[in-house]
Each structure stands twice: as structure tokens, then as C-alpha cells.
Image (tube, rainbow, N blue to C red):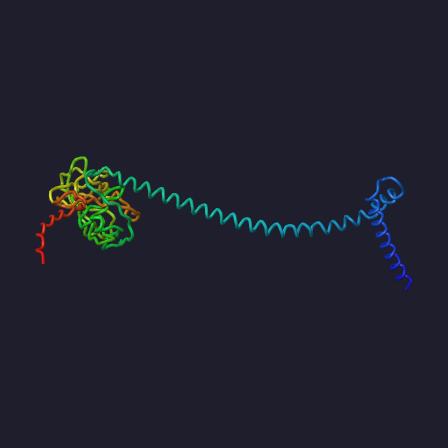
Length: 305
């Protein structure tokens, strides 16, 4: 029992000492360093310092942890806001690049150096039907703009095909690579001529040639514009990608890669030109004033009643 009483008294004495030291430190902080309280206060600091360090050793990490939790939440919100802002800016940049690219493509379509005297209508591709047996596109302008079947259709890079059918508000265009497509062409620079045909399952056009035709890989192919041709002459078609000599003296075959990337078509221009008729002039509407009415003949005076 005496051992427990001694340990209890020691605890009370230690607690009293700590409380006294804290009181003295508090009083000392409110007075100058001189006088007895200053001396006792400095002594109390020496006694309390180990306890302060122990408390700081526990309290500082806890404080840092709470600060980290608070700051982490704020940083997370800031990161989310920054990511959203970056996504908005990237989306705006993509839209701006798209608009600039479309404007440049439209400008180049209007300035195509072909048939300057032929009127043209620029339209947007709204649908694609691309497969082994049909290659067509649908555009957003049609008969209301004077577009009619067989009119040539071009993109910035070259010939796209011809109008297959048109209606008010749209038209269907058969592409060069359609299996039913064919166009009379000339191979420059030596002028060999033939018919470029679409082939099922291939993105190359086939041109049958004579044995003595001088045609080489890399030669440019344009529309020939021969009599009764569907297309006017000089429209760029493509470039010779392969040349094959057929066995048994059956001639040669050139395979032509079109200039136009049909999968990437967004805008086209339709030339108001039809076979056998040439350029088509847009109809104009004039209003003629009706003839003035003839003046009424004077009426005789009525007889008096």
C-alpha cells in the first residue's frame, strides 16, 4: 500500500509542478525578462520544454494531416475545374480548325481553274453510300439550284463523278469508282486515250490501252472531252498507278488512282454543264408591266326626262 501511495504522490507532485511551470511561463510572457518572475519563468521553461516538444511531436503531424486533407480537397476541385477548362478550350480549338479548313476548301472550290465561263453550285455532302456494288454520295442542293442529271461534280482535288438524279433539296452523285461509272480520258503528256471505268472491290480505275500507247506510272489522267463525252475536257481525274501488258498482244491496261479521296468528301461543286448542250445559263425571271388600260370612251349626255 505504501508503494502505491508514494507513486500517487509523485504523480500529483509532477502534475502540480507542470501546472506551476505553465502558470509562471504565462506570467513571464506578460512581463519583461527582469525580476524574480523572469528568473523563475526561465527555469519553468527548462522544465516544461520536454513536455512541449512531446506535445509538438504528436500535434504537428496531426495538424499536417488535417491540413493535407483540407488542401487535398481544394486541389482536387481545382484540378477538376482546370481539366474542364482545358477540355472546353480544346473543343473550341477543334471547332475553329474545322471552320478554317472548311472555309479554305470552299474558297478553293470557288477558285477552281476549270471552265471559268461555266456557272457552278457548291453543295455539302450529307450522305455516303459506299460499297462493292455502289459508290454514291448525296448532296444538299438539287433541282431548285438548276442541278440536273449528268452534270459534272468536282472537289478541290479533281473530278468526283456526275449527277445521277436530282430533286428539290438534294441530288445523288455517282462517283468515279462506282462499277457503273465510265469516263473518256486522256493520259498526258503523250495523249493516249481510253475509257476509265470503276471496278467492283477496287479503288483504282481501269483504262484499256493499245499496245503502242506510251503510258507510264505517274502520268496524269484528265477527261478527254471527245465528241459525245459526258464530261468536258481537261478535268483532272487521277494519276497512273500501275501499267500491265496483257498477254497475247491484247493491249495494255493502266490502273489509275483518283485524285479525290472519296471517303473524306465534305464539299463539292456542280458544274452547270450537260452533254451536247455545254454550259447551262441560270434562268432569269423578268417582270413586264401590263399594258395600260385604254381610256374609256365619253358617254353621251342623258336626255332630259
